[in-house]
Image: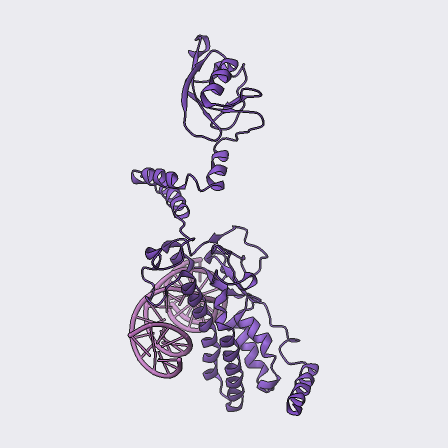
Length: 344
DNA sequence: AACAAGGTTAGAGTCCGTCA
DNA sequence: TGACGGACTCTAACCTTGTT
């Protein structure tokens, strides 16, 4: 209202790439661009100006109606500005401001009262303070606080962490032995369990899944250590796009322990009962061990999921009855192999 | 002694049947 | 209907035993 008839309107300008602001007064857009380009050292051809807040273009008609000291962005040629979103894009695209951002966020956090804003700032800090490029205990002591002294690198610990989860699955298979009444069936189950234990041991308990130093299809994370939620058992992908880098900070490492390796076809409700059932009238040697091994211990049936995507109710997925037993052709092959071996 | 492997316990949460 | 317990999904922490 007041500014409408004043000769010069005071505004604050900045360029797209630098966030330093300058106070400038101009009688119209033309003058503003002339002064602005000089001040910000931008080429003046095709320069234009828009609102910092939302990127709305400032025309000659619009300019006189702006409140005093409105924040504006001076752009040259084909540059664009979409307000805060553009700032976010910059924030994500480069690490060069990271230290400054961390300081700024910490400063805001120190006297922030509302839980919601605190949460947003904390999450921002958690992600900005990513030290995932560090690997050894000496480099990143904080990451290792509470971790057994024998672990010297993050990858070694993460590998162990995965191994012990998978060991737990094996333990549960073995634990089913004592539920069997018939001695004959128990004996066959024990044999099967022993074979599976040998197989999973040979595979080093698939600790490679969490180890970022492993090769591509073996690890479930990127080279930097980022894991992506694979979505709940009945979904192809995670709608929420959950992701985490347990290598980044101690907090991320601890939060990662709430992520689960979820058996699509369930271990206790489905796989173990199917194995028990199969052994009621079959010998251990008739069982397609490889199939059960894959269901119990490999990513073929395991999905890494954020706790929100971990559905604990019955999955109601069944084992493939065509896969459970060695096929006749398989046992023929076995026999042939055996003969050959004997001949050699 | 260092490390690997295994066992136990506790605790998060969901689902489902039973009982009042 | 709603409370409650049991069975299930997982996990980490802690401890013991065995191996190199």
